[in-house]
Length: 483
Image (cartoon, rainbow, N blue to C red; front, side, top):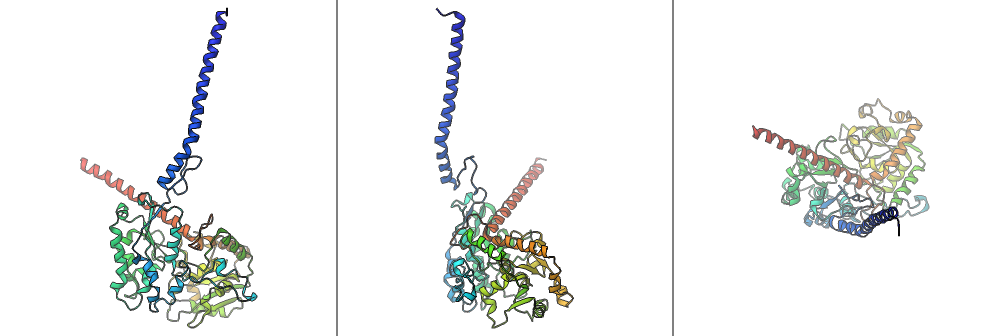
């Protein structure tokens, strides 16, 4: 017989063993269940919401970044490209310039060893890109954007692929204002009838008009027949419109400046890194350079003074762009000059900004600006807020009256400061170029990526502002009607 105390001890041990077996069983069941179910949850989530979940259960990087693209009738984009041959000289060589997904013709391989090593050829991502071709280039990049959605209710922003810049070009000369505005008015009617528009009144919509904003504000232009009135339309005032030069101060208005297209369109991260290494080690025998033509009919222009100062200096080289000159229209010549220059002079031209400023920075050349609107009041998403880190500013008034020597001003900058500016310019290169729309970069953010991020942040801020206003109005209504 087993003594009673020992029997009670055995019973207690047995109960404890059963308890821990149960605990371990349910714990193991939960773990096994989790392993079996989690992949299915991830699969269902991805299929239903265009997103995946990481190991920690968090949503992927598309959260808050989804974009829906309106499928516009082709008259708003594709038909404009298809009619490139009917511009009747209003846009010379338009068909060539919109070829290759809007990039234009690839730069040819050098004919002999003296011309270079092929670094500025089509094979390396270099094209004769027209400075106003951004409509098609941006649309092509948008179609490869990694966070597109087919469900507009899930989108944080809605892209409108209307080729406003091309529409401007085809009606520039020989048409009345009603014809110039016809496509914009047609687009407005089409948009406001869509459910996507009614959801937020167009505040989440954006489009790219790849010219200066002044080309779409005819009422404020000196010429009553220049351009369209796209930006004056009621619908356009609600949208974000990306242009290569804004007409409003940063933070005000709905047009936002993004970089002009340059000649460089990388196809992979390695293309960008390889180019940065090249310009970092480039020899720069010229202190400064200028590429451009004079503006003799514009009393505000300081180009004549800049051309005169450059011509009188042994440290400056320039490429003439006067009527009949071809140097300005040879991309390889322009880029070789900028690669061999420490500073590149960027006075205003027909408008405050210049495509040349971006070509220069892509070549590793420190830009010299003479008016704040040439860069400092523009491109707030793409260029540093501290302008002295990447550029030099020389007020134009002193140059105009002849009191300022550009060469002396630049020579007074300490060498260490110049090197820091060059390093910053080289660091900025990825943000200033648009990748080839037919390819995708992996980790490098180009000008397109930065612009889309800016649009999403702007739309989110305006949405929060609208929601706050609505809540305040609702609160006031309750107080008023409860009295």
